[in-house]
Image (cartoon, rainbow, N blue to C red):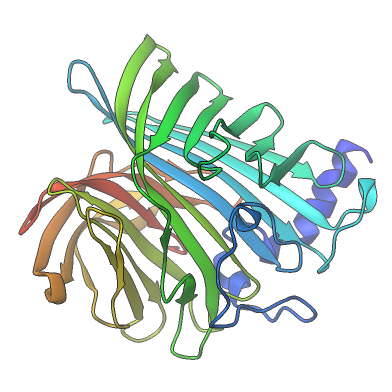
Length: 351
């Protein structure tokens, strides 16, 4: 298949691809739909689920250089399917997209890769774990008795930047929602969703000014579904927070014409998840900035009264715009108030 034909093929899948936002609320006839009460199964669930229409392996990292300079890093592999099956070679209905981002206080670097399934250019294996698209890789080095995601080597490169990191998990996998069944709307849309939020990171960034040694913390999400949004939901605001006290929190708001739908999971320092009731999380935009020609929040108030959380976030770089096929905002944040710490914020669907 020619490059031009491949691009046409990918465009035909646009409503379902990656973060097509409104397209994530379309019907998915013939695809599997997440159901409650199904236990996650590892290591098999680290791999792809071709019977579901949409899936992603999503890593973000808060990093620091020896001089205290902050950086943020993203590595994402998206899978979307034109049909609920797998076939060999060029007949595969699986499409893949990779995003790499690197954020500093003054710069945002972005790269994107597109690939077809079935020909080895991109894919994921469960054990030993490996995720790749072209020469971008997230490769597991776990000991035989350890979880397949417990140790990872990560690399990607784009115009004027690259990174190579080692990630070591210091805690357990965390199911999101109720045992991995994460509800996304009052109408019942849902996904299967778990995280590994306990990575310690070491490695090197390469920027125009040279190589920079960094350390920090990373958070990996793996999520799959077929219709994760309701038809009236247009995008989301997603937070992953590392508290200096050792706890962590994942929370999101899915936006609609009303108050939206919020969900959160409190994660104790020992990795025990405590899913919160829908609506328990409150997120309020406090300040906006013009980003890529659109007004977007760059400072938030995040509240979880059940855990006495009331913090204000601020972006390391308010212009952390991922100018990709489906553009969105993704970048590192700091927060202070009832708790202090660092984390990551993703905002999609803003026009």
